[in-house]
Image 1 (cartoon, rainbow, N blue to C red):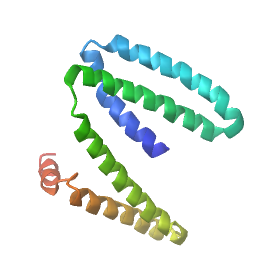
Image 2 (spheres, one colour; image 1 turned 180 degrees about the vertical axis):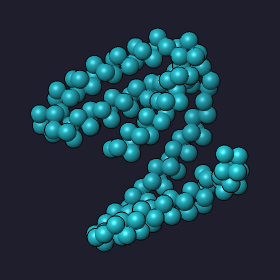
Image 3 (spheres, rainbow, N blue to C red; image 1 turned 45 degrees about the vertical axis):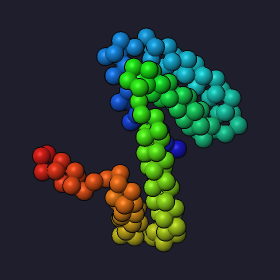
Image 4 (cartoon, rainbow, N blue to C red; image 1 turned 90 degrees about the vertical axis):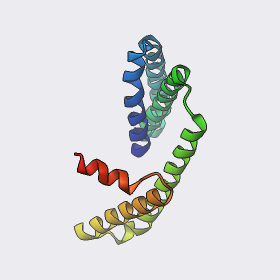
Length: 149
């Protein structure tokens, strides 16, 4: 859930300021208000039965709606390449899923700080190999950006 929220927040950070700059702050504020009210309602429904997990689910649902609305409004302004973005998102989700499965498979072997660090390194290695293999990560671009930093 936390990873999904982080992705949603990254997208929202990119779109929110852009909407304000484009003069669509009113639309964004309206959507934010509506999703905040819905979040309160879902919390009232889910927290008594599910506790903290219910609150997390309510937040993910409403923040997803807010993020999608922001992307839709940006799309109205710029005509985003939806197919390209959907393919990229699918590849990112697939890579993340494979990485999570691999790390989950070794969690029983984490018994110390060194074994934890190895599990993390394994996750990073799986992510890196799959990201490069699918073309989502270009080593030359990474090198170039590191040299200019």
